[in-house]
View (cartoon, rainbow over the protein chains, first blue to last red):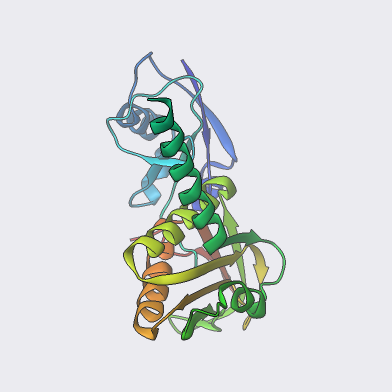
Length: 80
Length: 159
C-alpha cells in the first residue's frame, strides 16, 4: 500500500521535501514504516529520534497502518 | 431506556460546552496579545491569574541569535494544545486557561507563547501554568529554527 508521509522541522531540510510516499505491504505497522524510512532515507540518522503521528495523534510502534492514514514524522519538538 | 441515552448525551454535551467555555487555544502568525489572554481567563469567581509569557532570547550557548522561525503541524498542534488545556482543567482546581502560540518569524523580545490561568486561589493557577508550558514544550508539534550570523540550527533536533 501507498502511504503519504508528512515531514516537518529538521526532517524537511534533511530530505528536502515537505512530504514523501512510502510503499509498504498491507497491515504494516509504524515499526515497519520506521525500518523502510531508515533504508530509503539514510539522512534520518542525523536526528537521534523522532515520533510518528497517525491521523494527527502520536502513534505507538505496534500501530497498524491503513492506506488512508495521514502519517507524519515528528522530530523532537521545540515550541514555547 | 431512551431517556438514559438522552441523559448521557446531555452530560457529554455539557462537558464539551464547559471545556470550550473555559479554554482558549490559538495558533497564529499574528502578534500575540497578553491582554487577550488576560481578558479570556478573567472571572468574578477567581482570586488570581497566573500568566507565563515566553520571549525570544538574544543568546543561545553564547552565540548571538538574529532571528527565530517557528513552524508547526498545525491541526495536530492545535489538538495537542487543547489536550493540555483539558488536562489542566481536570488536574487542578482552576477556572479558565488560555494557551496561545505564535508561528512564523520572530525577533528578539517578541512573544512566541502565552499561557494564562485563573483560579479561586493562586496555588492552582501557578501550578497549572507551569504544567501547561512544560507539557507544551514536550508534546506540541511546533519547531523552532534559530538563525545566527554564521548559520542556523533546528533547536532540540540533535543529541
